[in-house]
Length: 273
Image 1 (tube, rainbow, N blue to C red):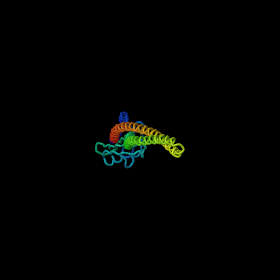
Image 2: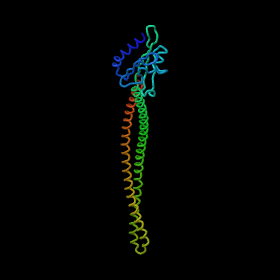
Image 3: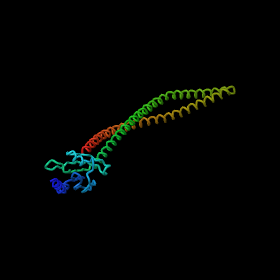
Protein backbone atom coordinates (compact mmCIF):
# COMPACT_ATOMS: atom_id res chain seq x y z
CA UNK A 1 0.00 0.00 0.00
CA UNK A 2 2.85 2.39 0.87
CA UNK A 3 4.43 1.73 -2.53
CA UNK A 4 1.12 2.59 -4.22
CA UNK A 5 0.92 6.00 -2.50
CA UNK A 6 4.45 6.98 -3.48
CA UNK A 7 3.89 5.61 -6.99
CA UNK A 8 0.72 7.65 -7.37
CA UNK A 9 2.50 10.80 -6.28
CA UNK A 10 5.35 10.06 -8.70
CA UNK A 11 2.93 9.58 -11.59
CA UNK A 12 0.98 12.77 -10.80
CA UNK A 13 3.95 15.02 -10.18
CA UNK A 14 4.96 15.63 -13.84
CA UNK A 15 1.55 17.24 -14.41
CA UNK A 16 1.71 19.28 -11.24
CA UNK A 17 5.22 20.57 -11.90
CA UNK A 18 4.08 22.05 -15.22
CA UNK A 19 1.72 24.36 -13.33
CA UNK A 20 4.60 26.01 -11.51
CA UNK A 21 6.29 29.07 -13.04
CA UNK A 22 8.85 29.69 -10.30
CA UNK A 23 12.14 27.88 -9.70
CA UNK A 24 10.76 24.77 -8.06
CA UNK A 25 12.03 21.33 -7.05
CA UNK A 26 9.90 18.45 -5.79
CA UNK A 27 11.30 15.20 -4.44
CA UNK A 28 9.38 12.07 -3.45
CA UNK A 29 11.04 9.89 -0.82
CA UNK A 30 10.48 6.61 0.96
CA UNK A 31 11.90 6.35 4.44
CA UNK A 32 15.49 6.03 3.22
CA UNK A 33 16.03 7.39 -0.27
CA UNK A 34 14.72 9.49 -3.11
CA UNK A 35 12.15 7.74 -5.29
CA UNK A 36 11.78 10.48 -7.90
CA UNK A 37 12.69 14.13 -8.38
CA UNK A 38 11.19 16.87 -10.57
CA UNK A 39 12.25 20.47 -11.06
CA UNK A 40 11.72 23.55 -13.20
CA UNK A 41 14.11 26.06 -14.80
CA UNK A 42 17.18 23.93 -14.11
CA UNK A 43 16.62 24.14 -10.33
CA UNK A 44 18.43 20.87 -9.65
CA UNK A 45 19.49 20.27 -6.05
CA UNK A 46 21.31 17.04 -6.81
CA UNK A 47 18.62 14.62 -5.58
CA UNK A 48 18.09 11.65 -7.93
CA UNK A 49 16.42 8.27 -7.73
CA UNK A 50 18.29 6.28 -5.13
CA UNK A 51 19.92 9.28 -3.42
CA UNK A 52 19.90 8.84 0.36
CA UNK A 53 17.94 11.30 2.46
CA UNK A 54 20.32 13.92 3.95
CA UNK A 55 20.53 13.91 7.74
CA UNK A 56 19.01 16.89 9.56
CA UNK A 57 17.32 18.02 6.37
CA UNK A 58 13.64 18.95 6.13
CA UNK A 59 12.76 15.51 4.70
CA UNK A 60 14.48 13.55 7.47
CA UNK A 61 12.91 15.72 10.19
CA UNK A 62 9.42 15.43 8.65
CA UNK A 63 9.66 11.63 8.54
CA UNK A 64 11.06 11.42 12.06
CA UNK A 65 8.61 13.84 13.70
CA UNK A 66 5.64 12.94 11.48
CA UNK A 67 4.87 16.59 10.84
CA UNK A 68 5.24 19.25 8.22
CA UNK A 69 8.72 20.75 8.35
CA UNK A 70 9.95 23.99 6.80
CA UNK A 71 13.61 24.80 6.57
CA UNK A 72 15.54 27.62 4.89
CA UNK A 73 18.76 26.54 3.21
CA UNK A 74 21.43 29.23 2.65
CA UNK A 75 23.22 29.87 -0.64
CA UNK A 76 26.43 28.25 0.64
CA UNK A 77 24.94 24.74 0.54
CA UNK A 78 23.92 24.37 -3.14
CA UNK A 79 24.83 27.76 -4.55
CA UNK A 80 21.16 28.79 -4.55
CA UNK A 81 19.23 29.82 -1.45
CA UNK A 82 15.87 28.07 -1.08
CA UNK A 83 13.10 27.16 1.32
CA UNK A 84 12.32 23.46 1.68
CA UNK A 85 8.91 22.33 2.86
CA UNK A 86 8.55 18.62 3.60
CA UNK A 87 5.31 16.77 4.32
CA UNK A 88 5.27 13.21 5.68
CA UNK A 89 3.32 10.66 3.59
CA UNK A 90 1.29 8.19 5.65
CA UNK A 91 -0.56 5.00 4.78
CA UNK A 92 -4.04 4.07 5.93
CA UNK A 93 -2.67 2.74 9.21
CA UNK A 94 -1.11 6.12 10.03
CA UNK A 95 2.40 4.93 9.45
CA UNK A 96 4.94 7.22 7.77
CA UNK A 97 5.99 5.59 4.53
CA UNK A 98 7.96 8.50 3.13
CA UNK A 99 7.74 12.18 2.41
CA UNK A 100 7.21 14.71 -0.35
CA UNK A 101 9.52 17.68 -0.23
CA UNK A 102 9.11 20.89 -2.21
CA UNK A 103 11.95 23.36 -2.49
CA UNK A 104 11.36 26.89 -3.78
CA UNK A 105 14.25 29.11 -4.80
CA UNK A 106 14.49 32.39 -2.91
CA UNK A 107 17.39 33.61 -5.04
CA UNK A 108 15.27 36.41 -6.50
CA UNK A 109 13.99 37.35 -3.07
CA UNK A 110 17.53 37.47 -1.71
CA UNK A 111 18.67 39.63 -4.61
CA UNK A 112 15.64 41.87 -4.13
CA UNK A 113 16.43 42.21 -0.43
CA UNK A 114 20.04 43.09 -1.23
CA UNK A 115 18.91 45.64 -3.80
CA UNK A 116 16.36 47.11 -1.39
CA UNK A 117 18.97 47.22 1.38
CA UNK A 118 21.45 48.88 -0.98
CA UNK A 119 18.81 51.37 -2.08
CA UNK A 120 17.94 52.18 1.52
CA UNK A 121 21.63 52.63 2.38
CA UNK A 122 22.15 54.83 -0.69
CA UNK A 123 19.14 56.96 0.19
CA UNK A 124 20.50 57.43 3.70
CA UNK A 125 23.89 58.49 2.32
CA UNK A 126 22.24 60.90 -0.13
CA UNK A 127 20.12 62.33 2.69
CA UNK A 128 23.23 62.88 4.82
CA UNK A 129 25.01 64.50 1.85
CA UNK A 130 22.04 66.79 1.17
CA UNK A 131 22.03 67.83 4.82
CA UNK A 132 25.74 68.69 4.55
CA UNK A 133 25.11 70.65 1.34
CA UNK A 134 22.21 72.46 2.97
CA UNK A 135 24.38 73.36 5.96
CA UNK A 136 27.20 74.55 3.68
CA UNK A 137 24.71 76.60 1.66
CA UNK A 138 23.47 78.30 4.81
CA UNK A 139 27.05 79.14 5.77
CA UNK A 140 27.81 80.55 2.32
CA UNK A 141 24.57 82.53 2.40
CA UNK A 142 25.57 83.98 5.77
CA UNK A 143 29.00 84.82 4.36
CA UNK A 144 27.38 86.55 1.37
CA UNK A 145 25.29 88.67 3.75
CA UNK A 146 28.42 89.55 5.73
CA UNK A 147 30.19 90.59 2.51
CA UNK A 148 27.21 92.73 1.53
CA UNK A 149 27.22 94.39 4.94
CA UNK A 150 30.97 94.95 4.70
CA UNK A 151 30.55 96.50 1.25
CA UNK A 152 27.85 98.81 2.58
CA UNK A 153 30.11 99.82 5.48
CA UNK A 154 32.91 100.53 3.01
CA UNK A 155 30.56 102.68 0.95
CA UNK A 156 29.71 104.67 4.07
CA UNK A 157 33.39 105.06 4.97
CA UNK A 158 34.29 106.18 1.46
CA UNK A 159 31.49 108.73 1.50
CA UNK A 160 32.88 110.13 4.78
CA UNK A 161 36.26 110.72 3.14
CA UNK A 162 34.64 113.15 0.71
CA UNK A 163 34.41 115.76 3.49
CA UNK A 164 38.08 115.27 4.36
CA UNK A 165 39.14 115.55 0.73
CA UNK A 166 37.07 118.68 0.24
CA UNK A 167 38.68 120.16 3.33
CA UNK A 168 42.17 119.33 2.05
CA UNK A 169 41.29 120.64 -1.39
CA UNK A 170 40.10 123.96 0.08
CA UNK A 171 43.29 124.26 2.13
CA UNK A 172 45.33 123.58 -1.00
CA UNK A 173 43.34 126.20 -2.88
CA UNK A 174 43.81 128.79 -0.13
CA UNK A 175 47.50 127.92 0.13
CA UNK A 176 47.86 128.42 -3.60
CA UNK A 177 46.25 131.85 -3.33
CA UNK A 178 48.51 132.65 -0.41
CA UNK A 179 51.55 131.63 -2.43
CA UNK A 180 50.38 133.75 -5.38
CA UNK A 181 49.90 136.80 -3.15
CA UNK A 182 53.28 136.20 -1.55
CA UNK A 183 54.91 136.07 -4.97
CA UNK A 184 53.28 139.37 -5.96
CA UNK A 185 54.48 141.00 -2.77
CA UNK A 186 57.99 139.61 -3.30
CA UNK A 187 58.09 141.13 -6.78
CA UNK A 188 57.03 144.48 -5.37
CA UNK A 189 59.76 144.27 -2.75
CA UNK A 190 62.40 143.86 -5.45
CA UNK A 191 65.80 142.53 -4.40
CA UNK A 192 64.80 142.73 -0.76
CA UNK A 193 62.10 140.17 -1.31
CA UNK A 194 64.29 137.56 -3.08
CA UNK A 195 64.26 135.13 -0.16
CA UNK A 196 60.55 135.67 0.37
CA UNK A 197 60.03 134.93 -3.33
CA UNK A 198 61.67 131.50 -2.92
CA UNK A 199 59.42 130.70 0.03
CA UNK A 200 56.36 131.87 -1.91
CA UNK A 201 57.37 129.63 -4.82
CA UNK A 202 57.69 126.59 -2.57
CA UNK A 203 54.33 127.35 -0.97
CA UNK A 204 52.75 127.50 -4.44
CA UNK A 205 54.40 124.20 -5.38
CA UNK A 206 53.13 122.61 -2.15
CA UNK A 207 49.63 123.87 -2.83
CA UNK A 208 49.77 122.52 -6.40
CA UNK A 209 51.11 119.18 -5.21
CA UNK A 210 48.42 118.95 -2.50
CA UNK A 211 45.73 119.70 -5.09
CA UNK A 212 47.06 117.01 -7.48
CA UNK A 213 47.36 114.47 -4.66
CA UNK A 214 43.81 115.23 -3.58
CA UNK A 215 42.57 114.61 -7.12
CA UNK A 216 44.46 111.31 -7.28
CA UNK A 217 43.11 110.21 -3.92
CA UNK A 218 39.62 111.17 -5.01
CA UNK A 219 40.03 109.15 -8.21
CA UNK A 220 41.24 106.14 -6.26
CA UNK A 221 38.34 106.41 -3.83
CA UNK A 222 35.91 106.57 -6.73
CA UNK A 223 37.37 103.34 -8.08
CA UNK A 224 37.07 101.78 -4.62
CA UNK A 225 33.53 103.10 -4.34
CA UNK A 226 32.60 101.56 -7.71
CA UNK A 227 34.19 98.26 -6.68
CA UNK A 228 32.27 98.26 -3.41
CA UNK A 229 29.02 98.94 -5.22
CA UNK A 230 29.72 96.10 -7.64
CA UNK A 231 30.62 93.78 -4.73
CA UNK A 232 27.42 94.74 -2.96
CA UNK A 233 25.31 94.04 -6.05
CA UNK A 234 27.07 90.72 -6.69
CA UNK A 235 26.59 89.72 -3.05
CA UNK A 236 22.87 90.34 -3.43
CA UNK A 237 22.83 88.18 -6.55
CA UNK A 238 24.72 85.42 -4.72
CA UNK A 239 22.28 85.65 -1.81
CA UNK A 240 19.37 85.31 -4.26
CA UNK A 241 20.94 82.30 -5.98
CA UNK A 242 21.67 80.65 -2.63
CA UNK A 243 18.10 81.25 -1.52
CA UNK A 244 16.82 79.55 -4.67
CA UNK A 245 19.36 76.76 -4.15
CA UNK A 246 18.18 76.27 -0.57
CA UNK A 247 14.59 76.02 -1.82
CA UNK A 248 15.62 73.44 -4.43
CA UNK A 249 17.53 71.46 -1.79
CA UNK A 250 14.41 71.39 0.39
CA UNK A 251 12.38 70.01 -2.53
CA UNK A 252 15.05 67.40 -3.28
CA UNK A 253 15.23 66.46 0.40
CA UNK A 254 11.45 65.96 0.47
CA UNK A 255 11.70 63.71 -2.59
CA UNK A 256 14.57 61.76 -1.02
CA UNK A 257 12.57 61.26 2.18
CA UNK A 258 9.71 59.89 0.06
CA UNK A 259 12.12 57.59 -1.82
CA UNK A 260 13.67 56.44 1.46
CA UNK A 261 10.22 55.54 2.75
CA UNK A 262 9.51 53.61 -0.45
CA UNK A 263 12.90 51.85 -0.20
CA UNK A 264 12.16 50.77 3.38
CA UNK A 265 8.71 49.55 2.33
CA UNK A 266 10.29 47.66 -0.58
CA UNK A 267 12.77 46.06 1.82
CA UNK A 268 9.95 45.03 4.14
CA UNK A 269 7.89 43.58 1.27
CA UNK A 270 10.86 41.71 -0.19
CA UNK A 271 11.46 39.99 3.14
CA UNK A 272 7.84 38.82 3.17
CA UNK A 273 8.04 37.24 -0.28
